Structures are given as C-alpha cells and as structure tokens.
Amino acid sequence: MNKLVIVLGMHRSGTSAVTRALTVLGVDLGSYLIESQEDNPKGFWEDSEMLSFNERLMRAVGMEWDCLRPIRQHEIEQLKCQGFLLEALSLLKRKTQNKIVFGFKDPRFTKMLPFWVSVLPYLGVKIYFLIAKRNPLDVVRSLKKRNEIPHTFGYLMWLEYMSSALRYTIDYPRMIVDYNELLENPVSEVNRIADFLGQVVNSDLLSEYSAVYIDFDLRHSHSTEKDLWLDPTCLPIVAELFSALGDVDGLESQALADILKGQGDEWARVMPLIEAIDRYRVSSVKFSVESSQKKIVELGGDILSLRGVLENEVREKNEVLDKIAAIEVQAQEYVERIQYLQQVIAERDTEVNSLRHQVLRHTQPAA
Image 1 (spheres, one colour):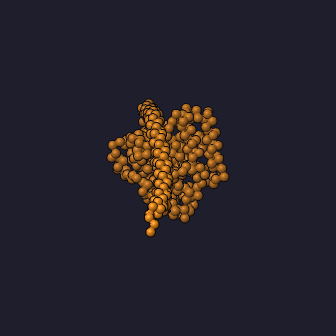
Image 2: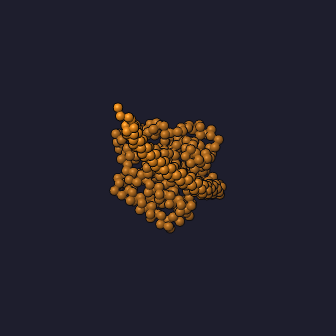
Image 3: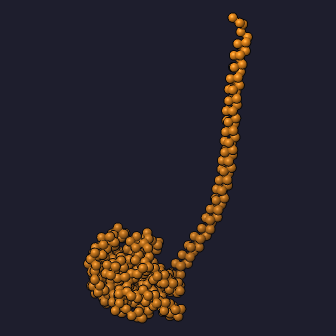
C-alpha cells in the first residue's frame, strides 16, 4: 500500500526541517513547493496547493491561521455541504496518485485537522503523522519577532495547534520529532524517522542534509524546559503539555491524556473568552489595516502635492535652462560677430598700412 506522510506542528516549530528530512528517505514532496523567503532562507518545503486550500477552508468559516478557537463541528458539516470534502479528497488523491510515498506539510493543516480526519479514511493509503515539537518559549519568541504576536497569545496558539495535532491523530501511526534533537543529532533522528516510516536512508542525501541544510545560525532561540516554566507569560498548562511530550511514554503517557482532557474541558469553559479575544484581535488588525490604508491615502495626497511642486520646480528649472541656452546661443553669436569685426578691422588695418607706404613713396623727394 502507498504511504502518505503528513508533518504537523505549530508555526515556527521546525516543520520545515522535518519535512526537508523526508527527502533523505525517498519521500516525494511534489512539484508545488513554496519558495524560500527571508524568514525561512532554507526553504519552507511546503506544498503551495495545500496551503491555498487550507486558507480557503479557514476563510469559509471565518478563521485565520492565528485564531485561538478551534473549528466547530457545525462548521465542519458546513464545509462538507459546500463541497470542500470532495474537493479535499480529489486534491489528496491527485497528490498521492502514482506516488509510492508522498509527504507534505502545512501548519494550517494542523489547525484544520478536525476537518481533514473526515477526508483521510477515503484515500486508500497508509497514513503516518510526524508531529514537530519545539520549546513553546522559542516558538513565541520567533512569532514575536516575525509577526509581533504577544507571548501569551503565542502560547495559546501553540496550545491549540499542538492539542489538535495530538487529539486527532490518536487513531494513526504517529511520532514526535524534536526540532532541537533534529538539529543536534540529524543522523540518529533521521534514522529514527526512517524506522518509523519503514523507509531506507540515502546516506549521500543524509550527509548533504546534515552538512548543508542543518544550520545552527538559523536557530535564534534555544530555551530549556526550566526556562519555559520560569517565563511569567507562560500558562501552566502549556508547560505541562510540553513536559508531558518529553516523558518516556511520550504519546502514550497517561499524563498527556489527562492534560489533553483538561485542556479540552478548560477550552470549552472559556470558549466565550477565547472567541472574544479572536474578535478583538481581528478587529484590531482590521483597524490597523484601515488606519494604514487611510495613511496610505494621505501619503498619496502628499505625494501628489509634492509631485506637483516638483513638476513646477522642474518646469521653472527647464525654463531657466532654456533661457540660459538662448543666452549662450546669443553670446556665441556676439562672439562670432566680434571675431568677424576683428577680422574686418585687421584687414582694414592692413589696407591702411599699405596705402600709408604708397603715400610715403610718392611724397618722398627724388634723390
């Protein structure tokens, strides 16, 4: 049976590094990868079609990638009625067709996983999940730098994304991949992924991955679990969930199950507050956008005004230059006239001198 490998995780959690590692194992990532950008110079290794589709899903239910609330069950049914389920199935079938092992990642897929788990059973392929794990403190620092997202909000986003990844993959083969471990021990970690997926490691590609792709300079924050617990902006449940993921039993630990249940119960209890925060954030962003647009209009008016002043100055300058050019032409004509007159005078002087000599010869007495 063909395989589908899906990389899950929160934004800024190392999903790109995990997905890039899949190429070492012969996993096909397709031909529609997003190009690298300044905030991810080594490449996103992200399927542009999957990203576009997930963004459409979110917009259809009034969500964005940075919403705190999860997708609701009635919204999933709404998406199905609108034809998104069949479209999603068609998209994945096209991606996996004639592919022995296909893989992709898009953090938004993690957010929309409650919808996607209703699609996956119809694919007819063996599905594996790799869940990228990174210290939430490093994640929120990265989000703050890239998106100006406050730490507390970033922690809540991490909690929602990771809870979704853990809660909705329980019926599938899944494995946690620690971002820092992958950077520090790429060979052993890639081999661990290979064993999980039943794939063969290409030693040459692994050497290239370790030597070229792995770059510690791109890891701008490396915090410890203790740092996370000491951060006053971190909610206890976030630190508890991260700690539980590092337990020996990992995904099968009772502590993790209890935390997820507690998070679900607490999330349901404070959902009105979560939704209010989302609305406030959306309205704040909308206000910011409208203010920026207003400022752009004002700047546009200033630019037009300055352009008019500049055009007047350029016109006046050109008029002055034209006058100068005319004066220079006139001056040149005067110079040429003067030179002509000087030549005429010189010729007249020559004639006068010649006549003077003739007069002198005629007036001198004969010897």
